[in-house]
Length: 389
Image (cartoon, rainbow, N blue to C red; front, side, top):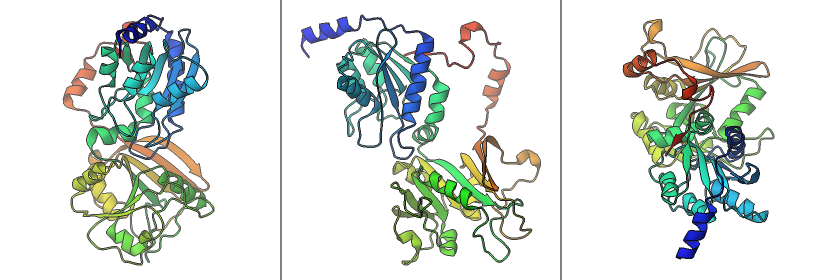
């Protein structure tokens, strides 16, 4: 870049960028809403971007539509240009730190620098070691960057992706479909159908949003599932998740798992950590586990379940297989506990969605206990204090 261009862009950035907090909050909420329009599945995060003029008015916006498509920042810049808006001097409000690497598309940080934006506000820093560094690159170019604007909402939107990137293992949702007394099958082994049509339809919409579905090899042989994501009319959703069988017993040639649907992958089930990390290496961000009791028990015993989807039907069986086997719990204090996130009625059935309660270390407990009472200097209630980086 020649010196004249450098001087011109430096001058462009002298435009005001200290916008009102309420306006930035509103812009970030819009960016989060845009991000949610992107696909929940796939290796890439859901990201939204809003461009504000120096007066705080929205002039362009964009979001990432999936792997191989422009990132949110590039989409917003393209939207600005399509409207005849010069993005120089604008403020970019982005749900995730702009990337700094060359993938299928160029670095978003460079795109913002080249466009002459005046400032960037970010909800969540990018933990991906491949893509991180965008904030530093922007700052080096003289662009002020803040991180932490509505961070809680950003973390919630990206929770499955963030978990996978931070841990190297997919976010695991365990699905249970049981009678009121916790049975998944009658005494004779029959299990279709404990739950009703609305609950089953909902479960298929969840399948269409995850990267992979897993069952144990015993369930694959006994139930002969297809593990496809199907619409109410029986047709397949466009996105079909990877079908995973955990266990060493082979899937028969004529099994429905080998029919139309996602790719079939079989992994040994005797080392769950290795299996989960193998899925992480394949960029599986969200894994839905659908059975059976042996696999559910093993995952719970290994503390590898991040979220529970318990579909409960108003049915009593009195005998038959239970959803979960022995977890080694001998007293109530040892119970595996989850925090209820949502309860939804689906016809006559109920769906309880609950998330793993993260353990609190002794040091953290001591820090919380001895923390000073919040004051106005710590930021407004319900708002993450922004951190300059």
